[in-house]
Image 1 (cartoon, one colour):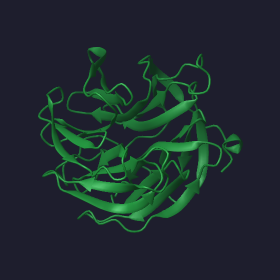
Image 2 (cartoon, rainbow, N blue to C red; image 1 turned 90 degrees about the vertical axis):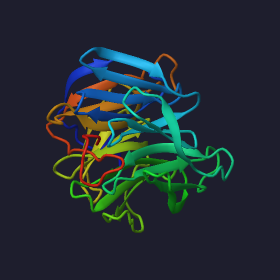
Image 3 (cartoon, rainbow, N blue to C red; image 1 turned 180 degrees about the vertical axis):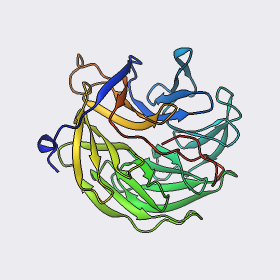
Image 4 (cartoon, rainbow, N blue to C red; image 1 turned 30 degrees about the vertical axis):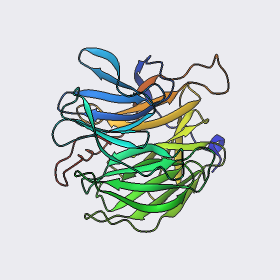
Length: 297
């Protein structure tokens, strides 16, 4: 896929949040409180954009890589090798589970609650390709390893009907899809797209079953069909685009997180963009439930 040859898609910037994240990730819309949340993974901070404006607070010491919504109104968080759970959106976090430290240095990366009510998370082990995995974690803390041999587990999402999972391996620069069942069974991954001139990062799905993929180093989002066929791109001012999620009362805005420029120290980055791309999202899934949904994707 040649990013430079993709047609530009129309997009209107509705709001820019100057959050100055070192590594903004995991945007999450909470319809119950009308809040958008995301993390600064490097600083271990949780950011909130709501009726009271933009706020941030430290949550962990270390890498806070992802957040998801919980049936009890709280959050589930991945921090280094641990899965944490809060009793409410602002409550203290307690450890629910952790993955083995094999190989040493491995940690969680992106994660989302799935249609089966479990948390699905990819891992990464810096400097050791093909040693990471895809895990799922249940409400009781049980952990299951599903795929091995991943280089850099990243974005995860599901089609609107929940019977197909999409997964990004940033190390291999690929987007894959796999059959998914309501009991948490996932089939073998099939590569549907490769991004040779950028690093695929987080992704989400819209109500028409198209994928929206953030491209680190590409300064853009790419819209893909469910079979991986590229449709076009949306350019952003920041070089490192990290993730995206539909937000707002009607899920009509695409919230896009970014990271600081790792090439040009003066290049900026780390803002969050709310874009009107002419599409709506689908309600996301809640950790701990298969029927209730939270607006997370």
